[in-house]
Amino acid sequence: MHFFAVHKQGMTLIEILIVLTVAVILALAITPSFLYWLETQRVNQALDSLEGALREAQREAMRRNQTCRVAINTGVNPIIAGQPPQCLPNGPRQLQHVTLRRNDGTASVQFGFQGRTSSTGTIVIAATNHPTLQRCLVVSLGLGIMRTGNYVETDTTGTTADNCRERN
Image 1: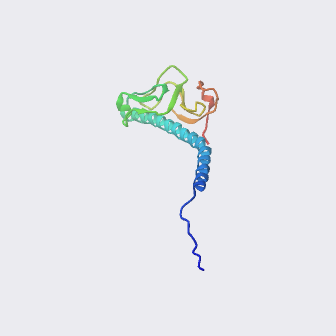
Image 2: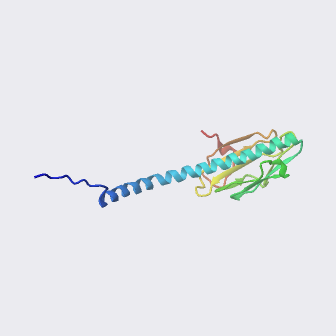
Image 3: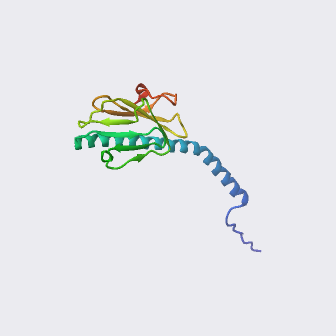
């Protein structure tokens, strides 16, 4: 008597449920890390955009031999605009998914025709969903030299230049 082996194709319901359970557990383990990484990228991109706008205005002030001001709104999803608009040839920028705060009452940074600034300031950018994830930009008095870094203070309202530490 000859017996033919029966070949099963596909997976059983139990095998499918086991695979789905493992996939859900892995997704739940990875999601928080991925979301934090995404927030970090958003904050870094906003900081790069802010620094780029300030450097662009500084270059335009020297190139045009005129004063250029960059208006920087504080709060959630701030807008950065040039005054006059020609100071930012690439146009105004809106920083998405971040909150911006400054250490002084002035809402702008002004560059003279030599690229110098008459004020100093610290700007802190924080993730909207993770307020302790903070980056900072410090504009120095006089030459208008800028530096960026991690804002290390756990207080989500502070803007002290000493707490702006170099990024690794």
